[in-house]
Image 1 (cartoon, rainbow, N blue to C red):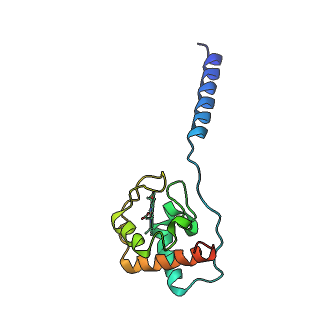
Image 2 (image 1 turned 90 degrees about the vertical axis):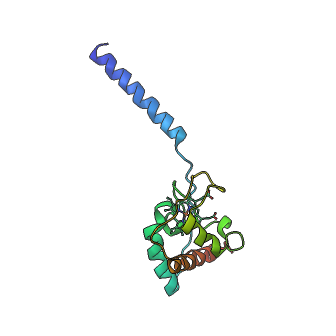
Image 3 (image 1 turned 60 degrees about the horizontal axis):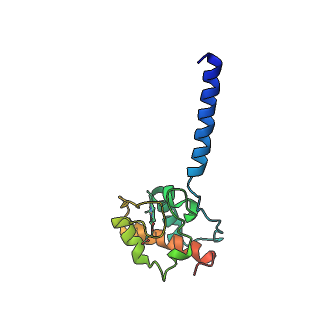
Length: 132
Ligand code: HEC
Protein backbone atom coordinates (compact mmCIF):
# COMPACT_ATOMS: atom_id res chain seq x y z
CA UNK A 1 0.00 0.00 0.00
CA UNK A 2 1.19 3.52 -0.69
CA UNK A 3 1.05 6.32 1.87
CA UNK A 4 -2.35 7.49 0.76
CA UNK A 5 -3.91 4.04 1.00
CA UNK A 6 -2.51 3.61 4.51
CA UNK A 7 -4.06 6.88 5.49
CA UNK A 8 -7.50 5.86 4.22
CA UNK A 9 -7.14 2.46 5.84
CA UNK A 10 -6.27 3.94 9.25
CA UNK A 11 -9.11 6.43 9.01
CA UNK A 12 -11.50 3.60 8.29
CA UNK A 13 -10.29 1.66 11.35
CA UNK A 14 -10.64 4.73 13.58
CA UNK A 15 -14.19 5.38 12.45
CA UNK A 16 -15.13 1.73 12.99
CA UNK A 17 -13.67 1.74 16.51
CA UNK A 18 -15.52 4.96 17.26
CA UNK A 19 -18.89 3.53 16.29
CA UNK A 20 -18.27 0.27 18.14
CA UNK A 21 -17.39 2.22 21.29
CA UNK A 22 -20.65 4.20 21.00
CA UNK A 23 -22.62 0.97 20.90
CA UNK A 24 -20.91 -0.40 23.97
CA UNK A 25 -21.10 2.78 26.00
CA UNK A 26 -22.92 1.92 29.22
CA UNK A 27 -26.29 3.50 29.65
CA UNK A 28 -25.97 6.36 32.08
CA UNK A 29 -28.44 5.84 34.90
CA UNK A 30 -27.64 9.07 36.71
CA UNK A 31 -30.77 10.81 37.98
CA UNK A 32 -31.73 14.45 38.36
CA UNK A 33 -32.16 15.35 42.01
CA UNK A 34 -33.20 18.28 44.15
CA UNK A 35 -31.15 19.15 47.21
CA UNK A 36 -32.75 20.17 50.50
CA UNK A 37 -32.29 23.87 51.29
CA UNK A 38 -30.62 22.92 54.51
CA UNK A 39 -28.96 19.79 55.83
CA UNK A 40 -28.79 18.77 59.47
CA UNK A 41 -25.39 19.02 61.13
CA UNK A 42 -24.95 15.25 61.01
CA UNK A 43 -25.83 15.18 57.32
CA UNK A 44 -23.25 17.85 56.56
CA UNK A 45 -20.60 15.63 58.17
CA UNK A 46 -22.04 12.69 56.26
CA UNK A 47 -21.70 14.59 53.01
CA UNK A 48 -17.96 15.05 53.55
CA UNK A 49 -17.44 11.33 54.13
CA UNK A 50 -19.75 10.43 51.25
CA UNK A 51 -17.83 12.69 48.87
CA UNK A 52 -14.52 11.06 49.85
CA UNK A 53 -15.58 7.42 49.95
CA UNK A 54 -18.74 6.90 47.93
CA UNK A 55 -19.15 9.67 45.36
CA UNK A 56 -16.69 8.08 42.92
CA UNK A 57 -19.32 5.44 42.17
CA UNK A 58 -22.60 6.73 43.57
CA UNK A 59 -22.17 10.18 42.09
CA UNK A 60 -22.63 13.70 43.35
CA UNK A 61 -25.30 13.73 46.07
CA UNK A 62 -25.97 10.06 45.32
CA UNK A 63 -27.20 10.72 41.79
CA UNK A 64 -25.31 7.78 40.27
CA UNK A 65 -22.48 7.37 37.74
CA UNK A 66 -21.42 4.80 35.19
CA UNK A 67 -19.72 2.92 38.03
CA UNK A 68 -22.53 2.76 40.53
CA UNK A 69 -26.25 3.29 40.97
CA UNK A 70 -28.04 6.38 42.28
CA UNK A 71 -28.86 6.02 45.98
CA UNK A 72 -31.59 8.61 45.54
CA UNK A 73 -33.81 5.95 44.08
CA UNK A 74 -36.91 4.11 45.20
CA UNK A 75 -34.89 0.89 45.51
CA UNK A 76 -33.09 2.47 48.43
CA UNK A 77 -36.01 3.87 50.38
CA UNK A 78 -35.92 2.83 54.05
CA UNK A 79 -38.56 0.11 53.74
CA UNK A 80 -36.75 -1.62 50.95
CA UNK A 81 -33.17 -0.96 52.03
CA UNK A 82 -33.07 -0.32 55.74
CA UNK A 83 -30.21 1.52 57.38
CA UNK A 84 -28.77 -1.90 58.10
CA UNK A 85 -28.17 -2.51 54.40
CA UNK A 86 -25.87 0.54 54.35
CA UNK A 87 -23.76 -0.85 57.18
CA UNK A 88 -23.59 -4.25 55.49
CA UNK A 89 -22.78 -2.76 52.09
CA UNK A 90 -19.84 -0.78 53.47
CA UNK A 91 -18.54 -3.65 55.61
CA UNK A 92 -18.97 -6.58 53.23
CA UNK A 93 -19.49 -5.02 49.82
CA UNK A 94 -22.48 -5.85 47.64
CA UNK A 95 -23.06 -8.52 45.02
CA UNK A 96 -24.87 -7.09 42.02
CA UNK A 97 -28.60 -7.76 42.24
CA UNK A 98 -30.48 -4.67 41.10
CA UNK A 99 -28.15 -3.32 38.44
CA UNK A 100 -25.37 -4.26 36.05
CA UNK A 101 -22.48 -2.34 37.54
CA UNK A 102 -20.80 -5.38 39.08
CA UNK A 103 -19.71 -5.68 42.71
CA UNK A 104 -19.44 -2.94 45.24
CA UNK A 105 -16.21 -3.70 47.13
CA UNK A 106 -16.09 -3.41 50.94
CA UNK A 107 -15.12 0.21 51.72
CA UNK A 108 -12.16 0.51 54.08
CA UNK A 109 -11.61 3.31 56.57
CA UNK A 110 -15.30 4.07 57.15
CA UNK A 111 -16.47 3.59 60.76
CA UNK A 112 -20.05 2.78 61.76
CA UNK A 113 -20.48 6.32 63.04
CA UNK A 114 -19.37 7.50 59.58
CA UNK A 115 -22.00 5.26 58.01
CA UNK A 116 -24.68 6.69 60.32
CA UNK A 117 -23.78 10.17 59.13
CA UNK A 118 -23.81 9.11 55.49
CA UNK A 119 -27.26 7.57 56.02
CA UNK A 120 -28.60 10.86 57.44
CA UNK A 121 -27.21 12.68 54.42
CA UNK A 122 -28.75 10.24 51.92
CA UNK A 123 -32.11 10.04 53.74
CA UNK A 124 -32.42 13.84 53.81
CA UNK A 125 -31.90 14.01 50.05
CA UNK A 126 -34.26 11.06 49.52
CA UNK A 127 -36.97 12.81 51.54
CA UNK A 128 -36.54 16.02 49.53
CA UNK A 129 -37.06 14.02 46.35
CA UNK A 130 -40.18 12.27 47.53
CA UNK A 131 -38.51 8.84 47.72
CA UNK A 132 -40.25 8.26 51.04
C1 HEC B 1 -16.35 1.04 43.54
C2 HEC B 1 -17.67 1.61 43.43
C3 HEC B 1 -18.48 1.84 44.69
C4 HEC B 1 -18.12 2.57 45.82
C5 HEC B 1 -16.81 3.33 46.07
C6 HEC B 1 -19.26 2.54 46.70
N1 HEC B 1 -20.26 1.80 46.14
FE1 HEC B 1 -22.08 1.37 46.98
N2 HEC B 1 -22.59 0.21 45.39
C7 HEC B 1 -21.81 0.06 44.25
C8 HEC B 1 -22.54 -0.77 43.31
C9 HEC B 1 -22.05 -1.18 41.93
C10 HEC B 1 -23.78 -1.12 43.93
C11 HEC B 1 -24.97 -1.88 43.32
C12 HEC B 1 -24.98 -3.36 43.49
C13 HEC B 1 -26.27 -3.91 42.89
O1 HEC B 1 -27.27 -3.95 43.60
O2 HEC B 1 -26.27 -4.22 41.69
C14 HEC B 1 -23.76 -0.48 45.24
C15 HEC B 1 -24.79 -0.59 46.16
C16 HEC B 1 -24.84 0.10 47.36
C17 HEC B 1 -25.93 0.00 48.32
C18 HEC B 1 -27.14 -0.91 48.21
C19 HEC B 1 -26.88 -2.15 49.00
C20 HEC B 1 -27.87 -3.25 48.79
O3 HEC B 1 -28.10 -4.00 49.74
O4 HEC B 1 -28.41 -3.36 47.68
C21 HEC B 1 -25.63 0.84 49.33
C22 HEC B 1 -26.48 1.10 50.57
C23 HEC B 1 -24.35 1.46 49.02
N3 HEC B 1 -23.89 0.98 47.81
C24 HEC B 1 -23.73 2.38 49.82
C25 HEC B 1 -22.43 2.86 49.61
C26 HEC B 1 -21.74 3.75 50.53
C27 HEC B 1 -22.35 4.31 51.81
C28 HEC B 1 -20.49 3.97 50.01
C29 HEC B 1 -19.35 4.80 50.60
C30 HEC B 1 -18.96 4.51 51.97
C31 HEC B 1 -20.41 3.22 48.76
N4 HEC B 1 -21.60 2.57 48.56
C32 HEC B 1 -19.30 3.18 47.93
C33 HEC B 1 -20.55 0.58 44.01
C34 HEC B 1 -19.83 1.35 44.92
